[in-house]
Image (cartoon, rainbow, N blue to C red):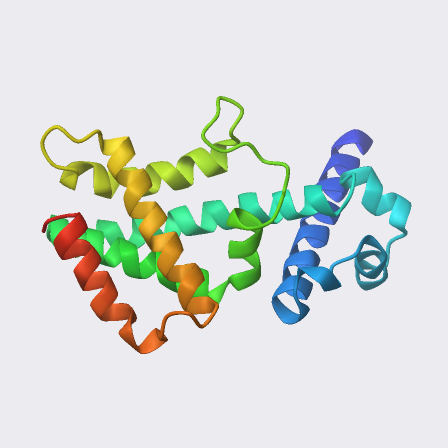
Amino acid sequence: MSVQERKERERAARERLIVATARELAEQQGWDAVTTRRLAERIEYSQPVLYSHFRGKREIIGAVALQGAAEMAAAVRAVASSANSPRERVAALARAYLDFAERNPAVYDAMFQLDGGLAFADEDTPEPLKDAFAALLESLGEVAGDGVHPGLFTEVFWAALHGLATLTRSGRLPPEYTEPRVELLVDRLAKL
Protein backbone atom coordinates (compact mmCIF):
# COMPACT_ATOMS: atom_id res chain seq x y z
CA MET A 1 0.00 0.00 0.00
CA SER A 2 1.31 3.41 -0.91
CA VAL A 3 1.79 6.22 1.59
CA GLN A 4 -1.02 8.14 -0.10
CA GLU A 5 -3.44 5.21 0.21
CA ARG A 6 -2.55 4.80 3.88
CA LYS A 7 -3.12 8.51 4.52
CA GLU A 8 -6.49 8.39 2.75
CA ARG A 9 -7.52 5.36 4.78
CA GLU A 10 -6.46 7.06 8.03
CA ARG A 11 -8.33 10.21 7.05
CA ALA A 12 -11.50 8.23 6.33
CA ALA A 13 -11.16 6.44 9.68
CA ARG A 14 -10.78 9.78 11.52
CA GLU A 15 -13.84 11.13 9.74
CA ARG A 16 -15.90 8.08 10.74
CA LEU A 17 -14.67 8.50 14.32
CA ILE A 18 -15.71 12.17 14.37
CA VAL A 19 -19.20 11.35 13.05
CA ALA A 20 -19.67 8.38 15.39
CA THR A 21 -18.52 10.42 18.39
CA ALA A 22 -20.78 13.34 17.50
CA ARG A 23 -23.70 10.99 17.09
CA GLU A 24 -23.01 9.24 20.39
CA LEU A 25 -22.64 12.53 22.26
CA ALA A 26 -25.82 13.92 20.69
CA GLU A 27 -27.80 10.79 21.59
CA GLN A 28 -26.53 10.93 25.19
CA GLN A 29 -26.68 14.67 25.87
CA GLY A 30 -28.38 16.38 22.94
CA TRP A 31 -26.97 18.38 20.05
CA ASP A 32 -26.16 21.38 22.24
CA ALA A 33 -23.48 19.24 23.91
CA VAL A 34 -21.80 18.59 20.57
CA THR A 35 -19.07 21.18 20.16
CA THR A 36 -15.87 20.98 18.17
CA ARG A 37 -13.91 21.41 21.38
CA ARG A 38 -15.68 18.54 23.12
CA LEU A 39 -15.39 16.33 20.04
CA ALA A 40 -11.67 17.05 19.74
CA GLU A 41 -11.20 16.08 23.39
CA ARG A 42 -13.20 12.86 23.02
CA ILE A 43 -11.46 11.66 19.89
CA GLU A 44 -8.08 12.84 21.17
CA TYR A 45 -7.23 14.96 18.16
CA SER A 46 -6.74 18.70 18.03
CA GLN A 47 -9.50 21.02 16.86
CA PRO A 48 -7.50 21.87 13.70
CA VAL A 49 -7.55 18.17 12.78
CA LEU A 50 -11.32 18.14 13.26
CA TYR A 51 -11.62 21.28 11.11
CA SER A 52 -9.57 19.61 8.40
CA HIS A 53 -12.50 17.19 8.01
CA PHE A 54 -15.50 19.42 8.72
CA ARG A 55 -15.83 23.20 8.64
CA GLY A 56 -17.90 23.09 11.79
CA LYS A 57 -20.83 21.60 13.62
CA ARG A 58 -23.24 22.19 10.74
CA GLU A 59 -21.25 19.87 8.46
CA ILE A 60 -20.98 17.29 11.22
CA ILE A 61 -24.77 17.37 11.62
CA GLY A 62 -25.04 16.91 7.86
CA ALA A 63 -22.73 13.89 7.96
CA VAL A 64 -24.80 12.34 10.76
CA ALA A 65 -27.96 13.04 8.75
CA LEU A 66 -26.57 11.30 5.68
CA GLN A 67 -25.54 8.30 7.75
CA GLY A 68 -29.01 8.22 9.35
CA ALA A 69 -30.74 8.44 5.96
CA ALA A 70 -28.81 5.41 4.76
CA GLU A 71 -29.70 3.48 7.92
CA MET A 72 -33.36 4.44 7.70
CA ALA A 73 -33.53 3.41 4.03
CA ALA A 74 -32.03 0.03 4.90
CA ALA A 75 -34.47 -0.47 7.80
CA VAL A 76 -37.49 0.42 5.65
CA ARG A 77 -36.37 -1.82 2.81
CA ALA A 78 -35.70 -4.72 5.16
CA VAL A 79 -39.21 -4.75 6.60
CA ALA A 80 -40.87 -4.00 3.29
CA SER A 81 -39.14 -6.90 1.57
CA SER A 82 -40.43 -9.38 4.12
CA ALA A 83 -44.08 -8.30 3.90
CA ASN A 84 -46.57 -10.46 2.02
CA SER A 85 -49.03 -7.84 0.80
CA PRO A 86 -49.15 -4.14 0.00
CA ARG A 87 -51.02 -3.47 3.26
CA GLU A 88 -48.45 -5.36 5.33
CA ARG A 89 -45.65 -3.59 3.46
CA VAL A 90 -47.03 -0.11 4.12
CA ALA A 91 -47.81 -0.86 7.77
CA ALA A 92 -44.35 -2.34 8.28
CA LEU A 93 -42.77 0.67 6.58
CA ALA A 94 -44.68 3.03 8.89
CA ARG A 95 -43.67 1.08 12.00
CA ALA A 96 -40.02 0.92 10.88
CA TYR A 97 -39.96 4.66 10.25
CA LEU A 98 -41.50 5.50 13.63
CA ASP A 99 -39.25 2.99 15.38
CA PHE A 100 -36.17 4.52 13.75
CA ALA A 101 -37.22 8.00 14.88
CA GLU A 102 -37.84 6.78 18.43
CA ARG A 103 -34.60 4.78 18.76
CA ASN A 104 -32.40 7.47 17.16
CA PRO A 105 -33.76 10.86 18.27
CA ALA A 106 -30.52 12.82 17.73
CA VAL A 107 -29.99 11.28 14.30
CA TYR A 108 -33.62 11.97 13.42
CA ASP A 109 -33.14 15.58 14.51
CA ALA A 110 -30.02 15.82 12.35
CA MET A 111 -32.00 14.48 9.41
CA PHE A 112 -35.13 16.60 9.71
CA GLN A 113 -34.96 19.27 12.41
CA LEU A 114 -31.45 20.75 12.38
CA ASP A 115 -29.54 22.63 9.71
CA GLY A 116 -26.95 20.24 8.35
CA GLY A 117 -26.45 22.27 5.20
CA LEU A 118 -28.14 19.62 3.05
CA ALA A 119 -30.45 20.30 0.14
CA PHE A 120 -33.76 18.44 0.09
CA ALA A 121 -36.02 17.94 -2.94
CA ASP A 122 -33.42 19.54 -5.18
CA GLU A 123 -31.02 18.43 -7.88
CA ASP A 124 -28.21 18.97 -5.33
CA THR A 125 -29.80 16.61 -2.81
CA PRO A 126 -27.13 14.14 -1.62
CA GLU A 127 -27.61 10.55 -2.75
CA PRO A 128 -28.35 9.08 0.73
CA LEU A 129 -31.30 11.47 1.12
CA LYS A 130 -32.60 10.63 -2.35
CA ASP A 131 -32.24 6.95 -1.55
CA ALA A 132 -34.14 7.30 1.75
CA PHE A 133 -37.04 8.87 -0.14
CA ALA A 134 -36.76 6.18 -2.81
CA ALA A 135 -37.03 3.51 -0.10
CA LEU A 136 -40.37 5.01 0.93
CA LEU A 137 -41.51 5.48 -2.66
CA GLU A 138 -40.79 1.84 -3.54
CA SER A 139 -43.54 0.66 -1.20
CA LEU A 140 -45.85 3.64 -1.17
CA GLY A 141 -45.89 4.32 -4.90
CA GLU A 142 -47.74 1.08 -5.55
CA VAL A 143 -50.63 2.11 -3.26
CA ALA A 144 -50.95 5.75 -4.27
CA GLY A 145 -54.18 5.10 -6.13
CA ASP A 146 -55.47 5.94 -9.55
CA GLY A 147 -54.67 9.43 -10.71
CA VAL A 148 -52.40 10.17 -7.73
CA HIS A 149 -48.76 10.92 -8.43
CA PRO A 150 -46.71 8.32 -6.50
CA GLY A 151 -44.10 10.88 -5.42
CA LEU A 152 -46.74 13.27 -4.12
CA PHE A 153 -48.48 10.47 -2.24
CA THR A 154 -45.14 9.43 -0.72
CA GLU A 155 -44.48 13.02 0.39
CA VAL A 156 -47.87 13.23 2.13
CA PHE A 157 -47.47 9.83 3.80
CA TRP A 158 -43.94 10.75 4.89
CA ALA A 159 -45.20 14.07 6.27
CA ALA A 160 -47.83 12.19 8.28
CA LEU A 161 -45.19 9.82 9.67
CA HIS A 162 -42.90 12.73 10.51
CA GLY A 163 -45.76 14.46 12.30
CA LEU A 164 -46.55 11.34 14.30
CA ALA A 165 -42.89 10.84 15.21
CA THR A 166 -42.35 14.46 16.20
CA LEU A 167 -45.60 14.93 18.12
CA THR A 168 -45.21 11.64 19.99
CA ARG A 169 -41.63 12.42 20.95
CA SER A 170 -42.56 15.87 22.21
CA GLY A 171 -45.31 14.39 24.40
CA ARG A 172 -48.13 15.97 22.43
CA LEU A 173 -49.45 12.56 21.39
CA PRO A 174 -49.60 9.67 23.87
CA PRO A 175 -47.26 6.87 22.75
CA GLU A 176 -49.66 4.09 23.70
CA TYR A 177 -51.80 4.96 20.67
CA THR A 178 -49.00 4.66 18.11
CA GLU A 179 -50.25 1.35 16.68
CA PRO A 180 -53.86 2.55 16.22
CA ARG A 181 -52.47 5.66 14.50
CA VAL A 182 -50.44 3.49 12.13
CA GLU A 183 -53.50 1.37 11.37
CA LEU A 184 -55.60 4.48 10.73
CA LEU A 185 -52.93 5.96 8.49
CA VAL A 186 -52.66 2.77 6.46
CA ASP A 187 -56.41 2.22 6.27
CA ARG A 188 -57.40 5.77 5.39
CA LEU A 189 -54.48 7.41 3.66
CA ALA A 190 -53.26 4.37 1.78
CA LYS A 191 -56.83 3.00 1.53
CA LEU A 192 -55.66 -0.54 2.16
